[in-house]
Image (spheres, rainbow over the protein chains, first blue to last red):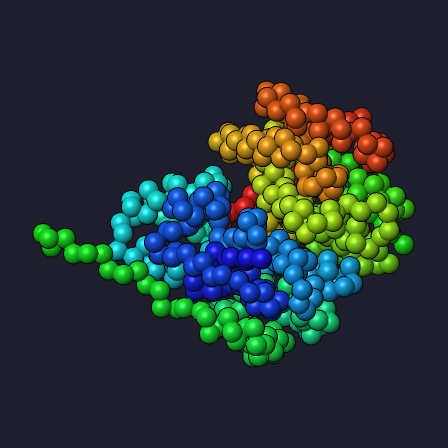
Length: 254
Length: 251
Protein backbone atom coordinates (compact mmCIF):
# COMPACT_ATOMS: atom_id res chain seq x y z
CA UNK A 1 0.00 0.00 0.00
CA UNK A 2 1.32 3.43 -0.87
CA UNK A 3 -0.10 6.76 0.09
CA UNK A 4 1.38 9.96 -1.27
CA UNK A 5 0.26 13.49 -0.44
CA UNK A 6 1.03 16.44 -2.69
CA UNK A 7 0.77 19.63 -0.64
CA UNK A 8 1.93 23.20 -0.15
CA UNK A 9 3.89 24.69 2.70
CA UNK A 10 3.26 26.33 5.04
CA UNK A 11 0.80 23.65 6.18
CA UNK A 12 -2.65 25.16 6.53
CA UNK A 13 -5.93 25.60 4.66
CA UNK A 14 -6.49 22.81 2.12
CA UNK A 15 -3.06 21.22 2.41
CA UNK A 16 -3.12 21.38 6.20
CA UNK A 17 -6.56 19.80 6.56
CA UNK A 18 -5.52 16.65 4.68
CA UNK A 19 -2.03 16.47 6.19
CA UNK A 20 -3.50 16.67 9.68
CA UNK A 21 -6.18 14.08 8.92
CA UNK A 22 -3.50 11.61 7.82
CA UNK A 23 -1.58 12.27 11.05
CA UNK A 24 -4.69 11.92 13.24
CA UNK A 25 -5.59 8.69 11.48
CA UNK A 26 -2.05 7.35 11.80
CA UNK A 27 -1.61 6.72 8.08
CA UNK A 28 1.96 6.40 6.81
CA UNK A 29 2.43 8.55 3.76
CA UNK A 30 5.06 9.86 1.41
CA UNK A 31 5.42 13.63 1.45
CA UNK A 32 5.41 15.31 -1.96
CA UNK A 33 5.82 18.98 -1.23
CA UNK A 34 5.04 21.36 -4.07
CA UNK A 35 6.81 24.69 -4.07
CA UNK A 36 4.09 27.29 -4.42
CA UNK A 37 6.72 29.97 -4.90
CA UNK A 38 7.87 28.09 -8.02
CA UNK A 39 4.28 27.44 -9.16
CA UNK A 40 5.15 23.74 -9.23
CA UNK A 41 1.44 22.90 -9.16
CA UNK A 42 1.13 24.27 -12.69
CA UNK A 43 4.10 22.42 -14.13
CA UNK A 44 3.76 19.33 -16.34
CA UNK A 45 5.05 16.90 -13.71
CA UNK A 46 2.22 17.74 -11.33
CA UNK A 47 -0.42 18.24 -14.01
CA UNK A 48 0.31 14.65 -15.02
CA UNK A 49 -0.83 13.64 -11.52
CA UNK A 50 -3.71 16.09 -11.19
CA UNK A 51 -4.71 17.71 -14.48
CA UNK A 52 -6.76 20.31 -12.60
CA UNK A 53 -3.63 21.68 -10.96
CA UNK A 54 -5.35 21.86 -7.59
CA UNK A 55 -3.58 21.15 -4.34
CA UNK A 56 -3.66 18.90 -2.36
CA UNK A 57 -3.84 15.57 -4.14
CA UNK A 58 -3.80 12.22 -2.41
CA UNK A 59 -2.59 9.22 -4.37
CA UNK A 60 -3.60 5.92 -2.82
CA UNK A 61 -2.36 2.80 -4.59
CA UNK A 62 -2.30 4.68 -7.87
CA UNK A 63 -5.74 6.22 -7.47
CA UNK A 64 -5.83 9.99 -7.59
CA UNK A 65 -8.10 11.79 -5.12
CA UNK A 66 -8.84 15.52 -5.09
CA UNK A 67 -10.97 18.02 -3.13
CA UNK A 68 -9.79 18.33 0.47
CA UNK A 69 -13.03 17.72 2.29
CA UNK A 70 -13.85 14.65 0.22
CA UNK A 71 -10.30 13.32 0.53
CA UNK A 72 -10.72 13.54 4.30
CA UNK A 73 -13.95 11.54 4.33
CA UNK A 74 -12.21 9.02 2.11
CA UNK A 75 -9.27 8.75 4.52
CA UNK A 76 -11.68 8.15 7.38
CA UNK A 77 -13.48 5.42 5.43
CA UNK A 78 -10.55 3.70 3.74
CA UNK A 79 -8.03 3.43 6.60
CA UNK A 80 -7.96 1.97 10.08
CA UNK A 81 -7.44 4.28 13.00
CA UNK A 82 -9.58 6.48 15.25
CA UNK A 83 -12.91 7.57 13.75
CA UNK A 84 -12.79 11.20 12.67
CA UNK A 85 -16.49 11.50 11.92
CA UNK A 86 -19.35 11.27 14.43
CA UNK A 87 -21.42 8.08 14.31
CA UNK A 88 -24.69 9.98 14.80
CA UNK A 89 -26.04 11.05 11.37
CA UNK A 90 -27.24 14.37 12.78
CA UNK A 91 -23.80 15.26 14.09
CA UNK A 92 -22.30 14.06 10.86
CA UNK A 93 -24.54 16.49 8.97
CA UNK A 94 -23.36 19.24 11.31
CA UNK A 95 -19.75 18.21 10.72
CA UNK A 96 -20.19 18.55 6.95
CA UNK A 97 -21.91 21.91 7.20
CA UNK A 98 -19.02 23.23 9.30
CA UNK A 99 -16.36 21.76 7.02
CA UNK A 100 -17.92 23.54 4.10
CA UNK A 101 -18.44 26.74 6.03
CA UNK A 102 -14.77 26.70 7.00
CA UNK A 103 -13.43 26.20 3.49
CA UNK A 104 -15.98 27.75 1.14
CA UNK A 105 -17.35 30.62 3.16
CA UNK A 106 -15.29 31.89 6.09
CA UNK A 107 -11.99 30.50 4.77
CA UNK A 108 -12.41 32.21 1.41
CA UNK A 109 -13.30 35.51 3.01
CA UNK A 110 -10.16 35.32 5.14
CA UNK A 111 -7.99 34.58 2.12
CA UNK A 112 -9.47 37.49 0.22
CA UNK A 113 -8.90 39.88 3.11
CA UNK A 114 -5.36 38.70 3.80
CA UNK A 115 -4.32 38.22 0.22
CA UNK A 116 -2.11 41.31 0.28
CA UNK A 117 -0.05 39.63 3.00
CA UNK A 118 0.28 36.43 1.00
CA UNK A 119 0.84 37.60 -2.57
CA UNK A 120 4.31 39.14 -2.22
CA UNK A 121 5.74 35.83 -1.04
CA UNK A 122 4.59 34.08 -4.18
CA UNK A 123 5.34 36.84 -6.62
CA UNK A 124 8.84 37.34 -5.28
CA UNK A 125 10.92 39.30 -7.75
CA UNK A 126 8.82 38.33 -10.75
CA UNK A 127 7.01 40.99 -12.70
CA UNK A 128 3.25 40.89 -12.61
CA UNK A 129 3.27 40.05 -16.34
CA UNK A 130 5.38 37.02 -15.61
CA UNK A 131 2.95 35.86 -12.90
CA UNK A 132 0.00 36.54 -15.16
CA UNK A 133 1.49 34.38 -17.90
CA UNK A 134 1.96 31.54 -15.43
CA UNK A 135 -1.59 31.87 -14.10
CA UNK A 136 -3.04 31.78 -17.60
CA UNK A 137 -2.17 28.08 -17.48
CA UNK A 138 -4.50 27.31 -14.54
CA UNK A 139 -6.68 24.61 -16.12
CA UNK A 140 -10.07 25.40 -14.55
CA UNK A 141 -11.56 28.64 -15.99
CA UNK A 142 -13.23 29.79 -12.75
CA UNK A 143 -10.06 29.21 -10.77
CA UNK A 144 -7.97 30.91 -13.41
CA UNK A 145 -10.14 34.03 -13.22
CA UNK A 146 -10.09 34.11 -9.43
CA UNK A 147 -6.33 33.59 -9.17
CA UNK A 148 -5.74 36.32 -11.72
CA UNK A 149 -8.06 38.71 -9.88
CA UNK A 150 -6.23 37.98 -6.65
CA UNK A 151 -2.72 38.43 -8.06
CA UNK A 152 -3.57 41.50 -10.05
CA UNK A 153 -5.39 42.80 -6.97
CA UNK A 154 -8.41 43.59 -9.10
CA UNK A 155 -10.83 42.21 -6.52
CA UNK A 156 -13.28 45.11 -6.11
CA UNK A 157 -12.93 46.91 -2.75
CA UNK A 158 -16.60 46.31 -2.01
CA UNK A 159 -16.02 42.55 -2.30
CA UNK A 160 -13.20 42.82 0.22
CA UNK A 161 -15.42 44.92 2.49
CA UNK A 162 -18.13 42.28 2.23
CA UNK A 163 -15.54 39.64 3.16
CA UNK A 164 -14.61 41.66 6.24
CA UNK A 165 -18.23 41.85 7.25
CA UNK A 166 -18.64 38.11 6.80
CA UNK A 167 -15.44 37.36 8.69
CA UNK A 168 -16.67 39.36 11.69
CA UNK A 169 -20.02 37.58 11.49
CA UNK A 170 -18.19 34.26 11.11
CA UNK A 171 -16.13 34.77 14.24
CA UNK A 172 -19.36 35.20 16.18
CA UNK A 173 -20.99 32.23 14.49
CA UNK A 174 -18.07 30.01 15.46
CA UNK A 175 -18.17 31.37 19.00
CA UNK A 176 -21.92 30.66 19.32
CA UNK A 177 -21.31 27.07 18.24
CA UNK A 178 -18.34 26.55 20.58
CA UNK A 179 -20.45 27.77 23.49
CA UNK A 180 -22.90 24.97 22.84
CA UNK A 181 -20.60 21.98 22.43
CA UNK A 182 -17.02 20.95 23.21
CA UNK A 183 -16.09 20.14 19.61
CA UNK A 184 -17.29 21.71 16.40
CA UNK A 185 -19.71 18.93 15.38
CA UNK A 186 -20.70 17.76 18.86
CA UNK A 187 -19.26 15.50 21.51
CA UNK A 188 -16.10 14.38 19.74
CA UNK A 189 -13.20 15.79 17.75
CA UNK A 190 -13.88 15.39 14.02
CA UNK A 191 -12.97 16.55 10.52
CA UNK A 192 -14.86 19.76 11.31
CA UNK A 193 -12.34 20.65 14.05
CA UNK A 194 -9.53 19.86 11.63
CA UNK A 195 -11.03 22.17 9.02
CA UNK A 196 -11.87 25.03 11.31
CA UNK A 197 -8.34 24.93 12.71
CA UNK A 198 -6.71 24.93 9.28
CA UNK A 199 -8.90 27.53 7.59
CA UNK A 200 -9.68 29.86 10.47
CA UNK A 201 -7.25 29.03 13.28
CA UNK A 202 -4.95 31.88 12.30
CA UNK A 203 -7.62 34.50 13.00
CA UNK A 204 -6.53 34.87 16.61
CA UNK A 205 -3.03 35.82 15.41
CA UNK A 206 -3.84 37.76 12.24
CA UNK A 207 -7.18 39.27 13.17
CA UNK A 208 -7.05 39.58 16.96
CA UNK A 209 -9.75 42.25 16.82
CA UNK A 210 -12.19 39.48 15.86
CA UNK A 211 -10.92 36.45 17.80
CA UNK A 212 -9.58 37.03 21.30
CA UNK A 213 -10.05 36.01 24.94
CA UNK A 214 -12.57 38.72 25.64
CA UNK A 215 -14.90 38.49 22.63
CA UNK A 216 -14.59 34.81 21.75
CA UNK A 217 -13.53 32.92 24.89
CA UNK A 218 -15.13 29.60 23.88
CA UNK A 219 -13.29 29.68 20.55
CA UNK A 220 -9.98 30.45 22.29
CA UNK A 221 -10.51 27.59 24.76
CA UNK A 222 -11.35 25.21 21.90
CA UNK A 223 -8.25 26.29 20.01
CA UNK A 224 -6.08 25.70 23.07
CA UNK A 225 -7.53 22.17 23.38
CA UNK A 226 -6.92 21.46 19.71
CA UNK A 227 -3.36 22.75 19.91
CA UNK A 228 -2.60 20.20 22.65
CA UNK A 229 -3.34 17.26 20.37
CA UNK A 230 -0.22 15.28 19.44
CA UNK A 231 -1.12 15.24 15.74
CA UNK A 232 -1.58 19.01 15.69
CA UNK A 233 1.78 19.44 17.43
CA UNK A 234 3.34 17.08 14.91
CA UNK A 235 1.93 19.11 12.03
CA UNK A 236 3.21 22.35 13.53
CA UNK A 237 6.66 20.77 13.84
CA UNK A 238 6.51 19.97 10.12
CA UNK A 239 5.27 23.40 9.12
CA UNK A 240 7.79 25.48 7.26
CA UNK A 241 7.12 29.19 7.56
CA UNK A 242 10.38 30.28 5.98
CA UNK A 243 9.74 29.61 2.38
CA UNK A 244 10.61 32.78 0.54
CA UNK A 245 11.65 32.40 -3.04
CA UNK A 246 15.40 32.27 -3.63
CA UNK A 247 16.66 35.45 -5.34
CA UNK A 248 16.93 35.31 -9.12
CA UNK A 249 20.44 35.14 -10.53
CA UNK A 250 21.76 38.64 -11.14
CA UNK A 251 21.80 39.79 -14.74
CA UNK A 252 25.24 40.57 -16.14
CA UNK A 253 24.16 44.13 -16.91
CA UNK A 254 22.92 44.78 -13.38
CA UNK B 1 -42.05 14.01 12.32
CA UNK B 2 -40.23 14.70 9.07
CA UNK B 3 -41.08 17.77 7.02
CA UNK B 4 -39.55 19.14 3.87
CA UNK B 5 -39.87 22.84 3.04
CA UNK B 6 -39.42 23.07 -0.68
CA UNK B 7 -40.46 24.78 -3.86
CA UNK B 8 -41.01 23.15 -7.25
CA UNK B 9 -39.25 19.80 -7.86
CA UNK B 10 -36.34 21.20 -9.82
CA UNK B 11 -32.71 21.99 -8.94
CA UNK B 12 -31.90 21.65 -5.22
CA UNK B 13 -35.47 20.75 -4.23
CA UNK B 14 -35.47 17.94 -6.79
CA UNK B 15 -32.32 16.50 -5.22
CA UNK B 16 -33.96 16.10 -1.84
CA UNK B 17 -37.40 15.07 -3.13
CA UNK B 18 -35.90 12.37 -5.36
CA UNK B 19 -33.76 11.15 -2.47
CA UNK B 20 -36.81 10.91 -0.17
CA UNK B 21 -38.76 9.02 -2.82
CA UNK B 22 -35.85 6.68 -3.62
CA UNK B 23 -35.48 5.88 0.08
CA UNK B 24 -39.23 5.48 0.48
CA UNK B 25 -39.22 7.84 3.46
CA UNK B 26 -42.58 9.35 4.42
CA UNK B 27 -42.58 13.11 4.91
CA UNK B 28 -44.85 16.14 5.13
CA UNK B 29 -44.44 18.41 2.15
CA UNK B 30 -44.37 22.11 3.09
CA UNK B 31 -44.58 24.09 -0.10
CA UNK B 32 -42.74 27.42 -0.12
CA UNK B 33 -43.56 29.68 -3.05
CA UNK B 34 -40.15 31.09 -3.83
CA UNK B 35 -41.44 33.47 -6.50
CA UNK B 36 -43.71 35.03 -3.86
CA UNK B 37 -40.66 35.30 -1.57
CA UNK B 38 -42.23 33.16 1.14
CA UNK B 39 -38.70 31.94 1.95
CA UNK B 40 -37.85 35.39 3.28
CA UNK B 41 -40.74 35.59 5.71
CA UNK B 42 -39.87 35.46 9.40
CA UNK B 43 -41.31 31.98 9.95
CA UNK B 44 -39.06 30.50 7.30
CA UNK B 45 -36.00 32.50 8.33
CA UNK B 46 -36.36 30.87 11.74
CA UNK B 47 -35.57 27.59 9.99
CA UNK B 48 -32.84 28.91 7.72
CA UNK B 49 -31.42 32.38 8.18
CA UNK B 50 -30.14 32.46 4.62
CA UNK B 51 -33.68 32.16 3.25
CA UNK B 52 -32.79 29.26 1.01
CA UNK B 53 -34.88 26.22 0.25
CA UNK B 54 -35.02 23.26 0.67
CA UNK B 55 -34.94 22.74 4.42
CA UNK B 56 -35.58 19.40 6.07
CA UNK B 57 -37.05 19.50 9.57
CA UNK B 58 -36.91 16.44 11.77
CA UNK B 59 -38.56 16.68 15.18
CA UNK B 60 -38.08 20.42 15.17
CA UNK B 61 -34.44 20.43 14.09
CA UNK B 62 -33.65 22.08 10.73
CA UNK B 63 -31.21 20.63 8.20
CA UNK B 64 -29.91 22.76 5.32
CA UNK B 65 -27.60 22.36 2.27
CA UNK B 66 -29.09 19.86 -0.15
CA UNK B 67 -25.88 17.82 -0.58
CA UNK B 68 -25.69 17.21 3.13
CA UNK B 69 -29.44 16.73 3.58
CA UNK B 70 -29.30 13.94 1.00
CA UNK B 71 -26.37 12.22 2.65
CA UNK B 72 -28.07 12.64 6.02
CA UNK B 73 -31.22 10.98 4.69
CA UNK B 74 -29.16 8.13 3.30
CA UNK B 75 -27.38 7.61 6.61
CA UNK B 76 -30.30 8.15 8.98
CA UNK B 77 -33.05 6.14 7.27
CA UNK B 78 -33.43 2.56 6.10
CA UNK B 79 -34.22 1.89 2.45
CA UNK B 80 -32.11 1.51 -0.66
CA UNK B 81 -28.50 2.69 -0.14
CA UNK B 82 -27.88 5.80 -2.23
CA UNK B 83 -24.16 6.01 -1.56
CA UNK B 84 -21.85 3.46 -3.19
CA UNK B 85 -20.15 0.89 -1.00
CA UNK B 86 -16.48 1.21 -1.96
CA UNK B 87 -14.65 4.17 -0.37
CA UNK B 88 -13.30 5.28 -3.75
CA UNK B 89 -16.78 5.31 -5.30
CA UNK B 90 -18.11 7.16 -2.25
CA UNK B 91 -15.40 9.76 -2.74
CA UNK B 92 -16.45 10.04 -6.37
CA UNK B 93 -20.10 10.49 -5.42
CA UNK B 94 -19.17 13.31 -3.04
CA UNK B 95 -17.02 14.97 -5.66
CA UNK B 96 -19.90 15.04 -8.14
CA UNK B 97 -22.11 16.58 -5.50
CA UNK B 98 -19.52 19.18 -4.65
CA UNK B 99 -19.07 19.95 -8.32
CA UNK B 100 -22.79 20.68 -8.55
CA UNK B 101 -22.66 22.93 -5.49
CA UNK B 102 -19.53 24.80 -6.58
CA UNK B 103 -20.11 25.16 -10.29
CA UNK B 104 -23.07 23.56 -12.03
CA UNK B 105 -25.90 24.87 -9.83
CA UNK B 106 -25.04 28.53 -10.35
CA UNK B 107 -24.31 28.08 -14.07
CA UNK B 108 -27.55 26.26 -14.87
CA UNK B 109 -29.63 28.57 -12.69
CA UNK B 110 -28.31 31.65 -14.49
CA UNK B 111 -28.98 30.15 -17.93
CA UNK B 112 -32.46 29.05 -16.83
CA UNK B 113 -33.14 32.49 -15.40
CA UNK B 114 -32.35 34.06 -18.76
CA UNK B 115 -34.72 31.58 -20.43
CA UNK B 116 -37.62 31.68 -17.95
CA UNK B 117 -36.95 34.26 -15.27
CA UNK B 118 -38.23 37.37 -17.00
CA UNK B 119 -41.50 35.79 -18.06
CA UNK B 120 -42.19 34.24 -14.68
CA UNK B 121 -41.59 37.54 -12.84
CA UNK B 122 -44.08 39.42 -15.01
CA UNK B 123 -47.09 40.65 -13.10
CA UNK B 124 -45.34 40.08 -9.79
CA UNK B 125 -45.37 43.60 -8.50
CA UNK B 126 -43.05 44.63 -5.75
CA UNK B 127 -40.28 42.14 -6.52
CA UNK B 128 -37.58 44.78 -5.95
CA UNK B 129 -39.08 45.75 -2.62
CA UNK B 130 -39.30 42.11 -1.57
CA UNK B 131 -35.68 41.52 -2.56
CA UNK B 132 -34.56 44.63 -0.67
CA UNK B 133 -35.98 43.03 2.49
CA UNK B 134 -33.91 39.82 2.21
CA UNK B 135 -31.80 39.87 5.38
CA UNK B 136 -28.97 37.56 4.29
CA UNK B 137 -26.83 39.76 2.09
CA UNK B 138 -25.33 37.21 -0.34
CA UNK B 139 -28.88 36.01 -1.11
CA UNK B 140 -30.06 39.56 -1.55
CA UNK B 141 -27.21 40.27 -3.95
CA UNK B 142 -27.96 37.14 -5.95
CA UNK B 143 -31.64 38.06 -6.32
CA UNK B 144 -30.79 41.66 -7.15
CA UNK B 145 -28.52 40.44 -9.91
CA UNK B 146 -31.19 38.08 -11.21
CA UNK B 147 -33.84 40.82 -11.36
CA UNK B 148 -31.40 43.01 -13.28
CA UNK B 149 -30.56 40.11 -15.57
CA UNK B 150 -27.23 38.33 -15.85
CA UNK B 151 -24.70 39.95 -18.18
CA UNK B 152 -24.02 38.20 -21.48
CA UNK B 153 -20.36 37.55 -20.71
CA UNK B 154 -21.29 35.73 -17.53
CA UNK B 155 -23.85 33.61 -19.36
CA UNK B 156 -21.21 32.76 -21.95
CA UNK B 157 -18.98 31.50 -19.12
CA UNK B 158 -21.89 29.56 -17.66
CA UNK B 159 -22.52 27.94 -21.02
CA UNK B 160 -18.84 27.03 -21.11
CA UNK B 161 -19.18 25.47 -17.66
CA UNK B 162 -22.18 23.43 -18.84
CA UNK B 163 -20.23 22.24 -21.86
CA UNK B 164 -17.33 21.27 -19.62
CA UNK B 165 -19.66 19.35 -17.30
CA UNK B 166 -21.21 17.49 -20.22
CA UNK B 167 -17.70 16.42 -21.21
CA UNK B 168 -17.03 15.08 -17.72
CA UNK B 169 -20.33 13.23 -17.60
CA UNK B 170 -19.84 11.76 -21.08
CA UNK B 171 -16.41 10.47 -20.05
CA UNK B 172 -17.74 8.93 -16.84
CA UNK B 173 -20.62 7.19 -18.61
CA UNK B 174 -18.27 5.53 -21.03
CA UNK B 175 -17.35 2.92 -18.44
CA UNK B 176 -20.54 2.73 -16.40
CA UNK B 177 -24.28 3.37 -16.56
CA UNK B 178 -24.02 5.58 -13.47
CA UNK B 179 -21.76 8.40 -12.34
CA UNK B 180 -20.21 6.94 -9.18
CA UNK B 181 -19.63 3.21 -9.28
CA UNK B 182 -21.83 0.36 -10.40
CA UNK B 183 -25.20 1.65 -9.20
CA UNK B 184 -27.45 4.69 -9.06
CA UNK B 185 -26.37 7.08 -6.31
CA UNK B 186 -26.63 10.58 -4.89
CA UNK B 187 -24.20 11.64 -7.62
CA UNK B 188 -26.74 10.78 -10.31
CA UNK B 189 -29.46 12.57 -8.35
CA UNK B 190 -27.36 15.73 -7.93
CA UNK B 191 -26.32 16.01 -11.55
CA UNK B 192 -29.76 15.05 -12.88
CA UNK B 193 -31.54 17.64 -10.74
CA UNK B 194 -29.73 20.40 -12.64
CA UNK B 195 -28.99 18.77 -15.99
CA UNK B 196 -32.67 18.03 -16.51
CA UNK B 197 -32.92 21.70 -17.50
CA UNK B 198 -30.40 21.30 -20.31
CA UNK B 199 -32.30 19.56 -23.13
CA UNK B 200 -34.32 22.78 -23.43
CA UNK B 201 -31.68 25.32 -22.35
CA UNK B 202 -28.73 24.13 -24.40
CA UNK B 203 -30.14 21.57 -26.85
CA UNK B 204 -27.13 21.96 -29.15
CA UNK B 205 -24.71 20.98 -26.38
CA UNK B 206 -26.82 18.10 -25.11
CA UNK B 207 -27.36 16.57 -28.54
CA UNK B 208 -23.58 16.34 -28.85
CA UNK B 209 -23.56 14.24 -25.66
CA UNK B 210 -25.42 11.03 -26.53
CA UNK B 211 -24.45 9.07 -23.41
CA UNK B 212 -25.67 11.90 -21.19
CA UNK B 213 -28.94 12.02 -23.09
CA UNK B 214 -29.47 8.28 -22.60
CA UNK B 215 -28.57 8.62 -18.92
CA UNK B 216 -31.05 11.50 -18.48
CA UNK B 217 -33.72 9.19 -19.89
CA UNK B 218 -32.62 6.35 -17.61
CA UNK B 219 -32.88 8.55 -14.55
CA UNK B 220 -36.19 10.10 -15.67
CA UNK B 221 -37.70 6.62 -16.04
CA UNK B 222 -37.12 5.71 -12.39
CA UNK B 223 -40.42 5.51 -10.47
CA UNK B 224 -39.03 7.58 -7.59
CA UNK B 225 -37.91 10.32 -9.95
CA UNK B 226 -41.32 10.38 -11.61
CA UNK B 227 -43.02 10.51 -8.23
CA UNK B 228 -40.81 13.42 -7.12
CA UNK B 229 -41.39 15.43 -10.29
CA UNK B 230 -45.13 14.75 -10.01
CA UNK B 231 -45.19 16.88 -6.85
CA UNK B 232 -45.02 19.97 -9.08
CA UNK B 233 -47.72 22.59 -8.67
CA UNK B 234 -46.87 24.40 -11.85
CA UNK B 235 -47.47 22.74 -15.24
CA UNK B 236 -43.76 22.11 -15.74
CA UNK B 237 -41.23 22.35 -12.89
CA UNK B 238 -38.36 22.66 -15.35
CA UNK B 239 -39.88 25.77 -16.92
CA UNK B 240 -39.54 27.83 -13.74
CA UNK B 241 -36.39 28.84 -11.91
CA UNK B 242 -35.04 30.68 -8.88
CA UNK B 243 -31.58 32.25 -8.62
CA UNK B 244 -28.93 29.71 -7.73
CA UNK B 245 -26.16 29.99 -5.15
CA UNK B 246 -23.71 32.82 -5.56
CA UNK B 247 -20.94 32.18 -8.02
CA UNK B 248 -17.65 31.20 -6.51
CA UNK B 249 -15.66 34.35 -6.09
CA UNK B 250 -12.21 32.91 -6.16
CA UNK B 251 -10.08 30.01 -4.95
